[in-house]
Image 1 (spheres, one colour):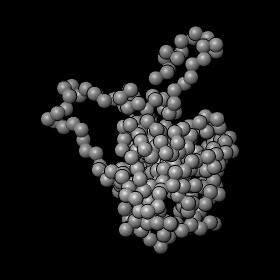
Image 2 (tube, one colour):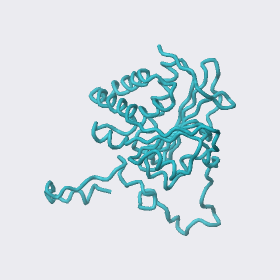
Image 3 (cartoon, rainbow, N blue to C red):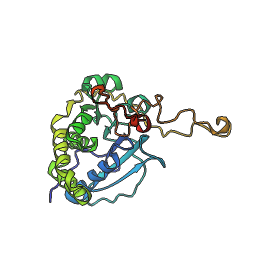
Image 4 (cartoon, rainbow, N blue to C red):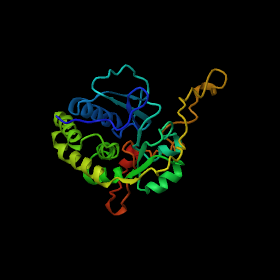
Length: 270
């Protein structure tokens, strides 16, 4: 049994994490593993749940994790609006979602990206928070896993109070049930995420956090402005969302020398 002490909490005694993702990248499972590691192996109290539509694959997904001291009850199930840590599983969300909304001063944001943390800080317009970057997709492709366990490694490293071995034990227990052949690959992916995350720490001196305050989005259309015939003017699987189409988060590569001209790609490639 490990133990953990939360480095900082909000006015209600919670340390809160928000995972920003698209369906198919495993953010829901990542949140579940984080919560189980904290509650079952680190002696914390906590809760986890996710928010997504009826068809979540390829569309935006949010997963929420709350931790508090073991003696405190969790009596809220509201979405995390002012997180201490945000993890962005797909860089395309930076264009379509305000992923840093509500991020607390002194908090941290992790982005699955090949860009440098300094580039991401400038793009997001953030000060007073730690910005981290991890090529989670590249690691997942090399290890033949998903980005979620790589992001779990980065989250564990950045938040500082989660024991890596506790999270790895939870990963092992989770995958051992249905996919025992994937256990070692996902443990390697976690280790690489933990070691390869790049950090740009928050500057000292009390700089203001330039993240926007969180605003829950309301419905875009009502009976006064809904398109005639229920037309979908902003579908989630087009260039308008720029989520690189694939439910795995990346486009397949075409190698002409390997192509057999079977034309199956015409049927199955989005």
